[in-house]
Image 1: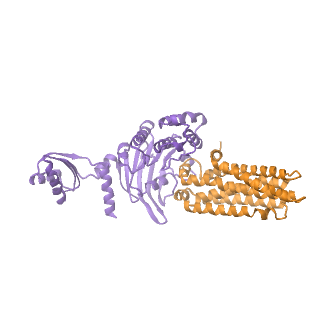
Image 2: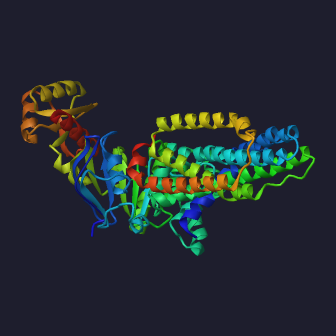
Image 3: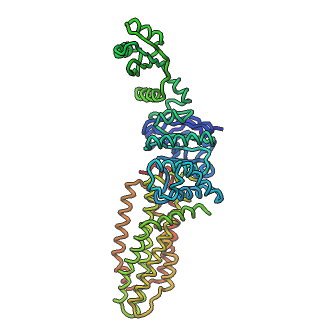
Length: 312
Length: 233
């Protein structure tokens, strides 16, 4: 059974469509990235999966069940870290975790040990009795993640978990997420617009744009499916780089051209690499080396966004 | 422990730890000091009626005022900060969360009202030649009607805070404050109206409190997670 199944899901607010024809599946133990720009419908999708919103049509199934208000058993198997950390600023880190442990019905005999373990996991053992209001954004986020795991969830929903964090805290949170999947076999649904994050931690991803899924595949598959050949051309002479770019773009052979000293990186527009190479040589440009390059997820994402806008 | 009590315990501890509790105690003291000395202006048997009227009106008003003061902290702030969304994802149902919060606010609000009752009794006795004790009808009023109305006020305010958007909530808060202020300014007319609180009056109030609680409990059926999630700031 899949951890998440979304079937033909749509959502409108006051007649305005926010999500349309959303379909995807997340296997157990997978870290799934849900990518999209602000306002694309990522949080709405997550809220539907959490039972906070009802879909206008279609359905969201978590472990084969619909997440409605009556399904408290299902909610006890889910961990959630939303944009807000769900923490009470006047309570200490320990008190926050204790409150949620009680709400989730964690047995009294296990509570203390579990809370200590999670504080250790988040690197906050030394601050267990400090009020959360005095924590930095990064510490709150890490504690929020620990809070989301208080019930040993089988699936963890994370909404922009590294948003607003400094690079070091970002790395720590990413490592924590990876450890959850690798060590605990936890399914993680990651809502984000941070492409680097998805590339580093996710095995699969969907790209959402204007309420529609434009692509959904493994990270490698996403790169390939939206990949027109990308060439890294190393020139003999730096002075030819500008001319090379002009030649390639003026004849519509390439798009997304980048230049870095003697190296020109181009995404080809249907031409074969040999044709492009031949054209450069014919025009008197000395080429030292040509390599096939893989398009980055960022390039794929931007390409999808661009096509989406053109489509509109 | 029932999960409603876990929520109630947390909210109660939260209120006791904030300065709202101190504000509540201050108001209990202030109302008592400002109102109870009126006893010395009354003569003869009227002093008992005046004393009971004081308790009847101010203890109830203070309970409702504290409900207003504490509800904002518990319902409104939690919604404004978005914590309510995380809470709605826990195994608790929406009604359990609402009921836990109502209970957690009602208890400290009622305790402040009881404090006011004790202070009014104490101060009135200082200014009276005879010993003043609440009549049995007033005791029933304090024991049943005041907590009933306080719980109804908390329930209704909590319902409003969860149902409405942030802007509407601010308007609601200001409107309620104006109504409470107006009601308190009418105190002299109500207390000195030349009547005695009767069993019938207290019984009537008790029925109203029960009906209000039933109505509010029914109204919570119209609360939904979707409504709350879409009205968060």
